[in-house]
Length: 310
Image 1 (tube, rainbow, N blue to C red):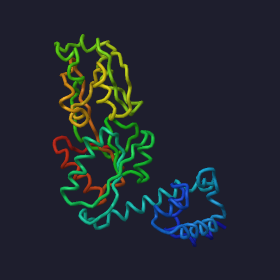
Image 2: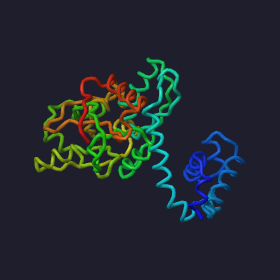
Image 3: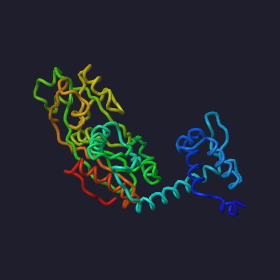
């Protein structure tokens, strides 16, 4: 019965199905699709007739998918993404006229050091692209790139999944930062002095093997971390009110710490630089819009950008 009814299925119905599933609300789905709520309701009624299933039922908050809808959403998204990417390779793309949305996943640190210069370059070029960032959990990055939920991911460590397109954006050396007037800032900053301090540590990837602690472990040393943060915003306030030391890339200092309130000292031990990478799904390659965005990022980071096989 469903096979015979599939002749009634058109592409717009699949877009409605995906929007209703993603928003868990007919009203919000209508807003996302820029159509009226009755139009979405009518499309949903057609879908229910085609599949012989309610697809979505009332829930405590909005609506919830039925088991059949849960089964369908993966193939529907894959089909829509494959079609969009195929058409994108043949589209005429004008960066000065297109209002396309470019979606990223990156941390607040990367927003400052990667997204800010990228948006500045878009502004200089007169582009009308819309930029959107949503920081995904690491386990969701590959599905997000594969489904087209995001176009690019910016990460400071290798991803667990193979098969990504990738490009090094920049490398950044670490320095040791503390408030101006800190007792340790007036003495020779040795490894012994460093180890005697309490430390502030920032990491938003729990699985990420910390470069600082890894370098110290190779020296059979372990520092005392008094405060752990996931985000960068509070770092300046915490450092200014304490005698904590923050070992962080130099770009963090430029973007998050006022120069007159803090001092940055050379770290007293060896460790590798922090490398920041751009990732994308190989299926996106060949899209004029996607290739143009990567070119703009190349221009923002000309010294380090190079291709690597995924």
